[in-house]
Every structure is written in structure tokens, then in C-alpha cells.
Image (tube, rainbow, N blue to C red):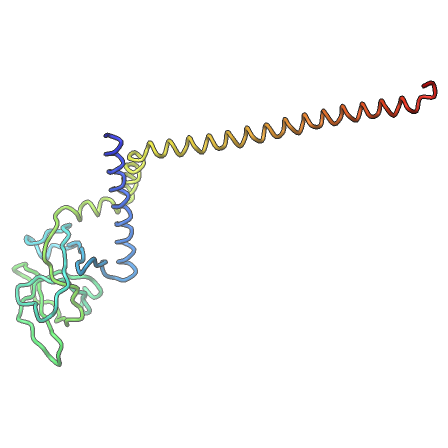
Length: 216
């Protein structure tokens, strides 16, 4: 039972490791978080939405049609103006959206009392609408993406699969032993063959000597 639990934990840790690596690589390549069935996981990285969303929390962002978004909704979008240009922003829609030439435009802001409106955005910049939040996941993610967290994760994976690692090591040693033993046996066979050949040559030389002896 304990071995089964260790294996399950190991599989979960390996899956978490690969997911974290995939998540980081995807964001760096595409500059946006990966989506799964219309949903994305985005980490809150600033205090602008506290106390509704704390730093380190992960929010679930679902794809939303621009006509369904209204004042008060919290959305995630990619900024294209100002000092936040290129960054993912999670803010609340502060004004009623409007349409111009068939395109929806939105104004957002932080929920802090002293906050001012962000630069206006278009529907093309919107990633989606925040529907749920997952506390503490961001803190765990931050820890395991640091070098010490990665080391700890690898150690935990090795411990979880320690029996498998030991079996693999033993099989490698056994294979090497069999190869060495086989090579040793081959050397002995060669040496025995050389001795037998030498004996036969000596016997042959004796026969030749007897044939050459005039007294015989």
C-alpha cells in the first residue's frame, strides 16, 4: 500500500514539474498563458485588485464575447499603451463599454480608492473574464520555479521513485556483471584454445622429428 501511494505521489509530482515547465515555456514563446478548453490560469502579480484578488492568487479566466462584458466585470487583457505595455493586466471594467465601427472599447481600473482609469482598450486585447480564483497556488508556483524549489521537487520525485531507481541501478550492474563475465569466459576459451593448439603443434613437431630420424 505504501509503495502504491509513493508511486501515485511521484506521478503527481512529475506531472506538476512538466506542467510548470510547459507553462513557463508557453508564456515566454507566445507571451500569453496557455488555454485549456476556453480557460486560462493567470497569476495575480500586483496589489491593484486587493482585497478582492491578493498577490500570488491564481485566477481562472474564461473566454468571453465582448458584447457580454459589462461595467463591474473583472477582465484580463494585454496592455498596449503606457508603462504597462506588453503586460497582462487584471482590472475591473469601470465604465460602460461602447461600440465604434463594430469594435467594442473598454475602460478599466484598479479597485484601489486612489486609482485612475487605465488607457482605453479594444476587444482584441482582452484575454477573457475572471470567473474564479484559486488561493495559494501562485505561492506554491513561485516556490517551485526558484532553483531551490526545483531541487526540492526533484529530490521528492527521486524519493517517490526510489525503489524503481534502485531496481534500474541493480539491473545495470547485473548487465555489466554478465558482460564482464562473458568477456572473461571468452578470454578463458581463447587461452584454452591456444594451449590446445600449442599442444597439437608440439605433437606434430614430434611426429615430424620421428619421421626425419634415420635410425627409425
